[in-house]
Image (cartoon, rainbow, N blue to C red; front, side, top):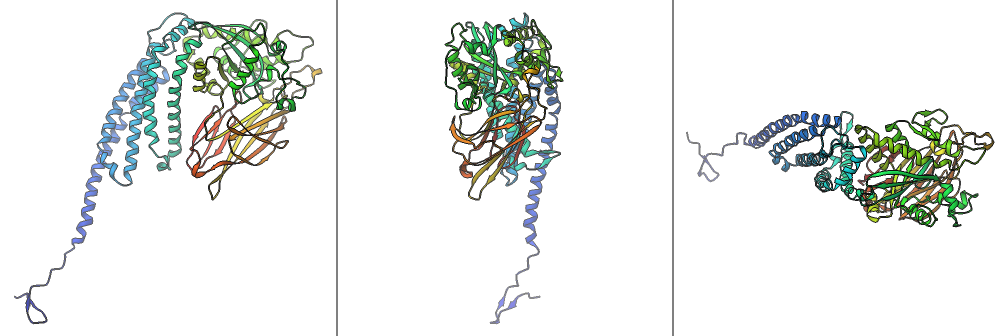
Length: 632
């Protein structure tokens, strides 16, 4: 059969072309097949990785258990086991490296790679730290037999101080490892994980982890100068003397509370001795200078004609206050020459008594943390107020001199405390330092810089960027700050042109009934109307739009590199007062800084904050200075 055909000219041509029998489907099927093979390989590798990751769970639980039991030798072993598992897991993950080239999936693969690198480096940091502290296991209250065992509590303190130079070099290694952790975590974008796992929002959780690691990295880096300077500050190279200023935080001032009493501590080769203590009014009686008071004192303390030592902590910066205070103090004849000042308030005393138990002070009675029904506050707080401020029929000489004897008894109990309590005492010191219930000031520049790096010096932040701080001063409202709580709500408004406006609402509440403050009644006047001199510190160049709730027109000026809104309001018992500050920030979103710092006032309790940020809302109690990353 002839399959040839004739064309129009009658010429023979070849057979017609055959129609394709569905070749088109082979291309997508081939692609799907390749994807299937890749997916199969990827799935198999991912399953193997998942099973290996689950295998690390027992090692993680061991580390947690050793930390909780404070078993340092066991912790070293469990960290080694976890590190080996982490390294093997990272190698397993690297086998899936080809996933990093797949669009969409690649970014998640790279996040996982950064996360694993951060995890391994974090374990290595913990290994170094555990190894460095192992010789001090028994000294620090951990389980295990360290190299420096034996002796009295004072002997152990001296041992630590004299051998700190063996620990400080290891901190550099820890810091380097934490920088690797921090650097890898910063490469991960939390916005890729805006979904929930159970009740937790992964993006928010991850942001908190990143901020915590960043803070830990800075803390370790900043701890080294303090550890280098600590032996010298503790008198290992020669005796040191420090003034302890007792801040009555029931009567809040710029840094701490009213400086009601002071004591002198002598520190010699790690041994601390409490020497004389006295009333701040006794010190002021020897202060012969007649200084013109600041405008705020002239305006709100009309019965105070001069600027006394007791009022020299109005500024929001502890160093600025102590530069002034110690300069005038050094000119008073007969007073001890001091190397620095330690400011403490009632919160610190209460926390020490919670650990050490009741303290009996000859001539002043017993001090405990039991609640006193007369103020619904710890008994030690009420008793100190009773000794210092209750009206007396006759002059009681140096009745605020209780501070020295009380400190002496606390020191004795601390030195006699069982070793397991030491970590509690150390934690109380760290926590109160972070919360600014203990602040330090040194004449020695290196020691001062070390304290500032630890954020233990009560300094105002001097860096640029977004900023907020509330400063309250009680100008004669008895001890009302023991009862007044504070809440801050921040709202953000971004205009179409990128203009940023913030509204900060500060709410003060005093739920307690007023005290009987009639002098003739002879009662202790704790709660009364609070004349509150307030200053709000915001970024320099901010423009005030509106204020509400102040009793007078606000005053706006620049100070300490910030713009200040200054005002006054009265807060009454069993009532609340709300103030509103609306201001326009000095930049638009395109030039806006990437962090916000909120600082806590020295000596203040922890106000509750709920603040709107460009991409989220943060709610927290301000127990210390906080820093937030901003994503506009």
